[in-house]
Image 1 (cartoon, rainbow, N blue to C red):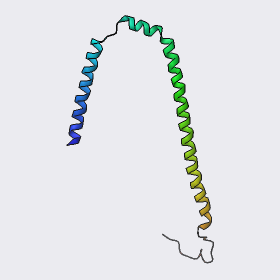
Image 2 (cartoon, rainbow, N blue to C red; image 1 turned 90 degrees about the vertical axis):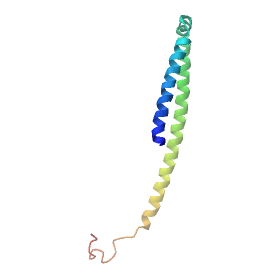
Image 3 (cartoon, one colour; image 1 turned 45 degrees about the vertical axis):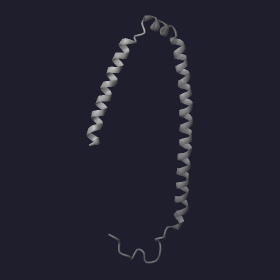
Image 4 (cartoon, helix red, strand yellow; image 1 turned 90 degrees about the horizontal axis):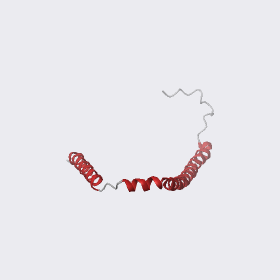
Length: 104
């Protein structure tokens, strides 16, 4: 039943948000002065956006380094487990091994 109600509720929420957005845009249009001020301040807005992009790059770089180190440590531990257990495998070079029938 929920699978039927969820798309209908999403449809109503989408329609109501569209109507609200249209009404809000028409009734609160800022006028030409606001757009002129925005155009005058565009270089400042651009420099702030470039600064924020740099901060985002720092955060993304730190996240990638942390995840890379974590992944490397996990793989290194797994490699050590495999490397230490190589000598524990049974050796098949024993006498009579070649005379045994093959497993099929």
